[in-house]
Amino acid sequence: MKKRFFALIVVVLIVSMLGACSPKEDDSQATEDGLQVVRVGVAWNEKIHSLIQAWQDYMEQYAETYGPENGIKFEFIVNVADGDATQQANNIQDLINQNVDIIVARPQDAGTIGASIEAAEAAGIPFITLDRTSSSGDPTTHVGEDSYLQAETTARAFAALLQENNVEGKCIEVQGDLLDNNAVLRHDAWVDVEEELSAWETIVAVPTEWKPEKFYSGALNALQAHPEANCMYVASDFTFSSIENALQAVDKLAPTGEANHIWMAAEDVNPQGYEAMLEGYIDVGTTWEAYDVSVQLVKVLTMLAKGEEVEPQYLIAGRLATPETVDSLEYLYAKEYAD
Image 1 (cartoon, rainbow, N blue to C red):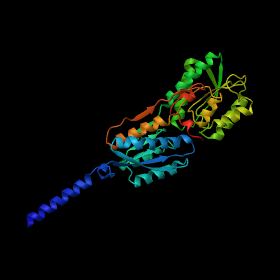
Image 2 (cartoon, rainbow, N blue to C red):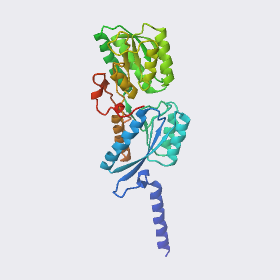
Image 3 (spheres, rainbow, N blue to C red):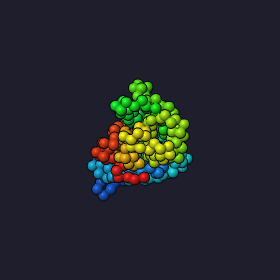
Image 4 (cartoon, one colour):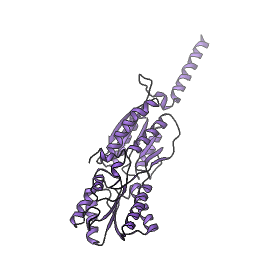
C-alpha cells in the first residue's frame, strides 16, 4: 500500500513538473481543422494615415491564405495609441496581460519603445517592430523598408533629371521627424548623394516633426526667404497638399514644363503624392511599400509561430516612380486608399 501511495505521489510530481515546464506554444489552441491558433497583438501608434490601414488590411488578407498553408490560423488583436507614446506603452502592456503569442508594434517613440520590448521579452512574447525601429532596445526582429535605399534611389534619379534639363539645383529640404529613424536615413541619403554628385545645393532644411501644419509653414517660409529656390526634396508626400498650398501662395505651383515649376522629389507615393505625381507637380519619388512589407510581416509571424530562427531585420526595397511610370506599378496602395 505504501509503495502504491509513493508511486502515485511520484507520478503526480512528474506531471506537475512537466506542466510547469511546458513551453508557451504547447498551450496554444487548435481549430476544428487542426490549425494552430496564433494570437498576434498589433499596437499601432496612430491610424491617421491610410498607409497604416493598408498595412493592416494587406496583413490580414495575406494571413488568411498563408497561415492555413502553414498549419496556422492567425487571430489579430489590434489597438491604437492616437500618437501618444505613453498610451502605446499601456496598450502593449494590455496585450502582454492578454498573453498574446506575438506582438507587432509601430513605435510612436523609438526612445521609449525599448521598455515595452523588455516587458514582452520578460513574458516570453516575441516582439516585432514594424516600419519604425527602436533606439532603446532590440526587438526579436524588425520588418520595414530600407529608407536609406529609398532616398538614395530618389536622389540619384533626381540628380539625373536636373542634369538632363541643365538645371543648377537650389533645393529646399523638407525633413521628417528626426526622432524617426526613417526620416534620419532619408536625410542622410539625400546629403550623401548631394555631396557625391553635386547636382544641387541644399540652401535650407525645414524640420516638420511629420506635422502637416509644419510642412506648410516651413515650406512657405523657406520659399519666401529663398526666392532663388528651384527644387525641393520632401521626406514624405503623405501631406503633399500642404506643400501645394505653400507653392500656390508664392505662385510656384506648376507642373513640369511650365516656367515657374519647382523641380520636386518626394518620397512614398502616398495617395496625395500619387495625385500630385499624376498632375506633374512631383517629378520623382520612391514608393513606401505597403503590400510587400505586409507580406514579409506575415512570413516572419509564421516563422516565429513555428519556433524558427529569424533575422534581426527584414527590409523591403521601394520602387522608383515618375509621372510616366507610376500608374504601371502593381500593388500600389495609393490607388486603392484615399486619405
